[in-house]
Amino acid sequence: MAGTDRWSFSREAGTILQERLKWRFVVLRLSKLFLKTLREDPADAEVPSHRLLQRAGYVRRVAPGIFTWLPLGFLTFRNVEQIVREEMDAAGFQEVHFPALLPAEPYRITGRESEYGDTLFRLQDRKKADYVLGPTHEELFTLTVKGEVSSYKELPLSLYQIQTKYRDEARPRAGILRGREFVMKDSYSFDIDDAGLEASYQAHRAAYISTFERLGLDFVIVSAVSGAMGGSASEEFLAPCENGEDTFVQCASCGYAANTEAVTTPAPAPQGHDEMPEAEVVATPDCDSIAALVSYVNSSSEPILADRSWAAADTLKNVVLMTQDPDGTETPLVVGIPGDREVDFKRLEAVLAPQEVRVFEEADFAKYPELVPGYIGPQQLGEAQPSGIRYLTDPRVALGTAWLSGANRAGHHTAGLVAGRDFTSDGSIEAVEIREGDTCPQCGAALTIRRGIEIGHIFQLGRKYAEALGLQVLDENGKLVTVTMGSYGIGVSRAVAAIAEQTYDDKGLCWPIAVSPADVHIMVMGKAPEIAAAANEIAEQAQARGLRVLIDDRRKASPGVKFKDAELLGVPNILVVGRGVADGELELLDRRSGAKTTVPMTEVVDQLLNLSAVVRATG
Image (tube, rainbow, N blue to C red; front, side, top):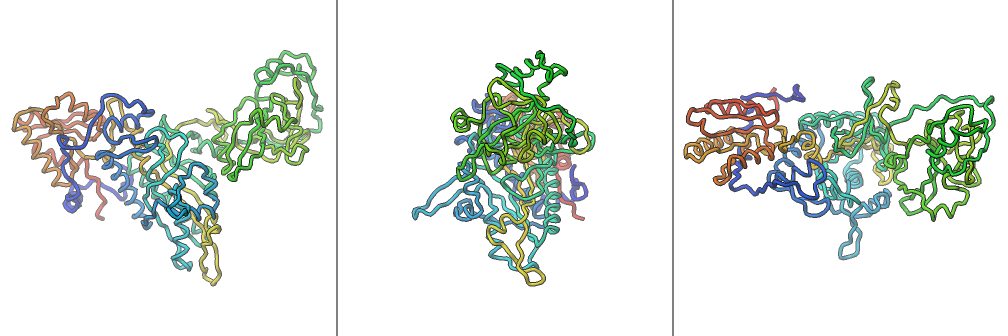
């Protein structure tokens, strides 16, 4: 169990704590519980968590990206929320609570009203004042601290909240994994200098590790990009899962891990080009694709082409894009990449944020006749060239590397174009797809690619928001200095789905004990009065000892239905109360492993306590 230095299985300590808290728990009876399980998958379910949370009656869809939490689902959600809160409190962070309805003006001052674009929910009150539904709360935290703190003596300070957020996702999908309304824990640190920020960042990082370990999540910490958030250091906590939306790389050799958006490409060392032959334009009819070009040049008799074998990686592909600033201004951008690669738009947008990017269209080409589709070369590209078109290249396009690329006229390419001699770029950009086996930037070994769900993200924001909103304090010399900030988020509602994704099996949900809506699922398997009486007595005893109890006391449900529902609902301990009552024995099933144990009735509550009571060590 994670965090064994602070957490232990202690029956005595557990009993004391449970006696204090037993008023919180009531026996949940399926005969009266607001619950309806489904035998068929919902038509709109896309991933296992989406499918199973609806089938098990934990959530119900209201509209795209908007869900209602039903009783068992909300209990699970609250368990996750409580663990998050306990770890934030244990780290010394202080909880506040902001409204979700916020004035738009602070977001205008920081520029994020336009950066969020259509993702931001906007509305007006009856006086026509502009408001937004909070997508995140950097501005409000900053302004609140500005109004309350004036001296370095009041820092460092870390505040957090657990609050509903709103983002108008263009394509809400995967149930509660990517919704338009979701619950997030966001916290912010305020320090006098960068050294203080580093300490606060590490404190949050440690608290996140403890949190996700307690939630029973398998997770990886990866390097990430800050994007529109700004700041320097940034790391993501990802839950590895084949249905995850995020892609990350790992190196088995050195331990390097990074979101694909943050992976850096080892660049070739600069090469001299004094003895390289001059570039030469060659005819390449009907070669407006990389595949057609490679096929043609490998069969060509042109001297500059015939003395070697050509591959797509030897060609320089120039991808034309249109970028759009938050104010709507559009500017062309050409990205030069090896011909065997494709542009990864997610990586590209992470680098260019808050700009948005789209593919160049036919109408755009009409405005820039120097760009010949299928035959674009780098010779005329660059802000210093007559075209004025910004040109960025992949790190592999290093000084002295030679390429086969377009000649800027239809049916022709140029062989032997040398970077730094025949063309220059306006800079380097990480924009191509990352592949299995690519080189680790730290040790040179091969990278593996995995998918995951983002469950947490931590940023060293720096002074972006403090400067925009005027957050300053007096330092020890009585001089006003700008506060430096960190930002730290955990997807609370998303964590429920992430746990479901990592733990489900072919029978249904399979919760870790820490987040399960109950510690034990008691099944009354028989109609004899003594069976029901025994089950109820055990339920009451377990509840009195602080256990969370779910009892299937439905009279008309068959044993088969009860077993299927128990497997679907996913409570980790299933207690079968049936014919064994006559012999004083019960069957205890481990939902996760399927293991069965026969337990004397007189010992069953103690056994359940041993399995379920995870308490804070008294020492």
